[in-house]
Image (cartoon, rainbow, N blue to C red; front, side, top):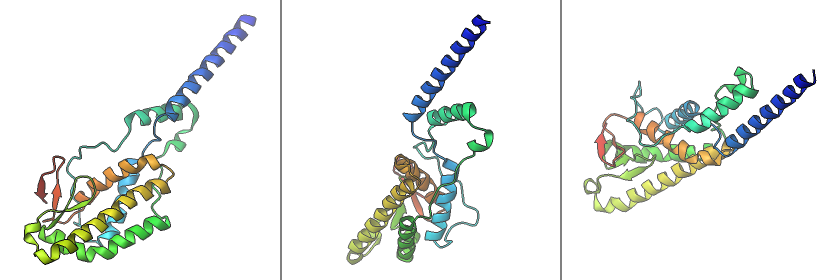
Length: 208
């Protein structure tokens, strides 16, 4: 009897030690990033900003050089979830994009889009591979208009950078900023109109 009790105590100690080790490992890794929810949230914001100026059936985005997931984190938390949580608790969470600052930034970009759209249509401005816009063909723009377009591009990029940061902060995960940016980078391109230019992973401009 005593031997069985001793074995049970040993097993409990080992299990507790394993659980503590698993917790420590997970704490040192970023919390699981819900990529599918982030894509859905990005599409909603993009549709609002571009006012429906997207294909009826969005094309699949070209492969992006950056990864938007954290496999090590996923496996870590999945293992911990299996150890502690019921299956229902493992469902992928939503991404919060309704904070006042996120709404303000997306509204600012929506208000700017009527000025940006003709430049995207003409190819003077294109979508970069890292989630921003850039002057693509300055030669196709009148010299007197170039400074204004550069300012427009700079303001758009400032709002985009702030948007990615604010979405991460609104979800209480500041370390998600780069992953949010990567998701938007692929979704801006995927939902762009035919005829717009975008950059591939190598920086080359491609007409969609």
